[in-house]
Length: 86
Image (cartoon, rainbow, N blue to C red; front, side, top):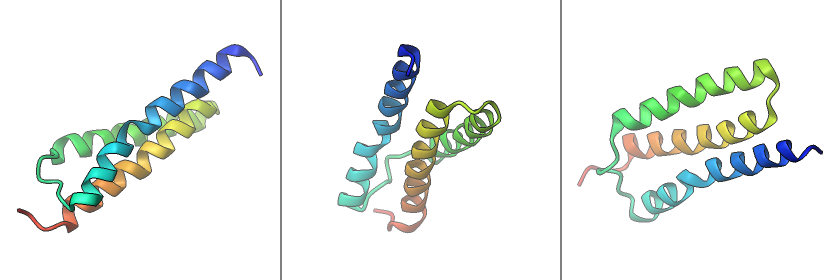
């Protein structure tokens, strides 16, 4: 595997884990009042665009990172609409 592919996969890993602490905290506290719905929708939309791009060009790091971020942002959106407002 070329070194640049390893760099790309490592970057994908780092990008993917950025939302994990937020998802964990939201799930633990059942609170997402401080999360901006606008920000979540922008992230969700941008990830969809990146996924189309990654699949079209068959870029594995882009597909991996954005698939994970897609799921995590979808989970945060679900929390945003289902957790009671405080």
